[in-house]
Image 1 (tube, rainbow, N blue to C red):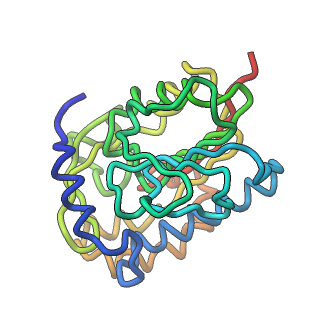
Image 2: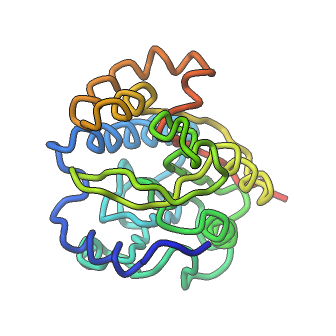
Image 3: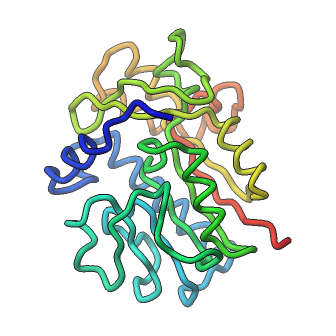
Length: 243
């Protein structure tokens, strides 16, 4: 897949002092939701802090994990250079051995700046059998793209927003991501959809701050599949099969 200029992405994020700023209500809500999901499932699955963890596109954020066994990977060095272990790299091709990590984090819509198929293939390569993957991505079936040519496409480049500016990235359908994970023998253990009603409001008013207020409805409408499948964001935890 071609279409995104990686150098432009690097420049844009290098110029930002903080990836998750509070005044960007939409994405700060995403950050809090991602963190809560990871924490809940780490506890539920009893994932130990003593295992080797690779954090792809980390931006320097370890979430609920301790960093002594974590490798931070990012295309931008400034947020990870002072970490105990770091690697500047595109996640589609990472210079680490096969089957070397017990847990992989790939959240913050990192995969939406890459070829999802190549990235998941690479995650499969570096993750040990039985290892866990936390994956979050932006969904092409979001109400934001309803009645556009990109709605529910397996993969499409769209124009959206981030911190008050226009943003171009890949979006992927949930069914496509699940299919790729299944092809690489991952079993999905838990899934959460968020920003469900808010993208519909954003499509109407083009105001992300006002639209983000409707994220409070996520916990209610998440139980209605016909609505929740149109969420802007999806986060899941999957396990690589042992054999």
